[in-house]
Length: 264
Length: 371
Image 1 (cartoon, rainbow over the protein chains, first blue to last red):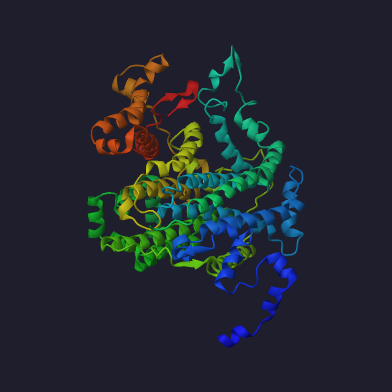
Image 2: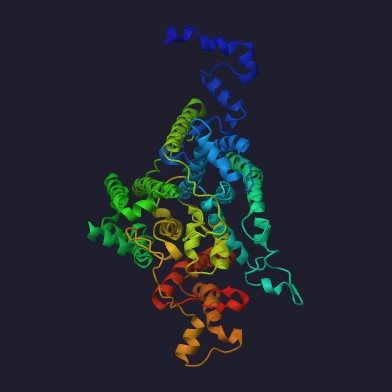
């Protein structure tokens, strides 16, 4: 053991070079102090504290589901960006572009990765929520973060839902038609919702098929060209942007609320 | 084999399967001493042992293996978009088993006066580098490999190009919303599609404020939080996950019920004999025509709904739930009641439909206000 420490490996030499030190800030993490520095001095790793309780590294406790959800979000962002290079959100091109992604690309599994990754993310988020419930981790002082988590779960579902339309196949438009039909029954602001008829001036209804919340969501009276563009923008820009804000809060609050939950 | 298949078809009808689940649920997650006694007596807790896991796994797999070789269920099961639901069934049950197993171990420890197994000396911590980051790295690589293999083996779902003129029958929402679509059978869109989702989201966010039991924070345990567990698990597993399973596997053309091994006959005729509460009262009970005034017509329905949602909690606060009310205070108590009663309104409406063919409790189609 002592022999080993005397021998300086290539890694150790690298660790002392100017380039390494400028990037990583500390040498090769060998001692306890250096290992703590490795976490504290790295913008990504310092999402974590330097030290965690023993049960926090047990798969049986965390099931890894929160981490995997975030990992899938990253995978989906990367594959999504690659898909955006080829996909055009118009009724004319959308479907054929999707076909081309598998037919014209060698080993074209980018859409598969994105699609299955999205389904997997819905599952991992649900399982993460179950874990947090089963360990009672929503209890004070973590009430607020549970609420943020519920919103993130809703956002995940909405991300998946907006992405569902983009292939522009039968599955897509009818699933979205069924889903968005709900909006017409929204109380007061859906044209078939209770109370919508109250919002009228004399005989003129303010809330009708061309002005209700479903119209705003679809950009029309039915799922069409405008809906495709709307869902594309929501899916690629708007909702991920909101998700990222909530994720930042979610991760920051884990640390502020005392790190991972555990028995006192 | 056909006998087993017929049995499955019979059991999976929502009336049967939902009832079985609802009746079995308090025995599986016992919320009170009596249920707990029965749970122990009948050995249901053995579900959360390795042997239990084996039998749960085998019975689900048995179903899917039979289903795979069945010409009809094979079509539903191997549809690419339904693959996540099979994964959901396995993973959801597995993690609940994993959590409950640890919960029972911890419950036994707490009984003996020991600390839960998650407890460690606060000073005895492990370093994130390398103890946590390498686990994360391994998990990440394994998961990525899994995802790539999955993507290579099974193509992403893609049907023929969109055609607004050809409505598929059945038209289904994305699989994670099928629970909501299933609720549409029992409630109008403004409740099943708008009010319920809002209540689910807000209600879930309100859980930490409604559950003020301080025990069981940061470790798996069942005994210390059994009522909370029961309510949450019933809401999540039965009213959400199970409804998704029904919506995916057992709902065919015209959203009619079909057993897993039945042919999806698009011409299946299901008589619509549902009638409204107002018709029950005015026509059947009082032998009169429906009154012209909407409010008079629906008065009984309004009384029922207001009574269920608002008067009943008030009465309960004075009588049976007096202790809970005093413990919770008015604001917390009414929040709990509002969300809890709304949640249980779903199974109640389901049974009213199945037992009495009740269509609407309040039926005012003139205002799109049907409950």
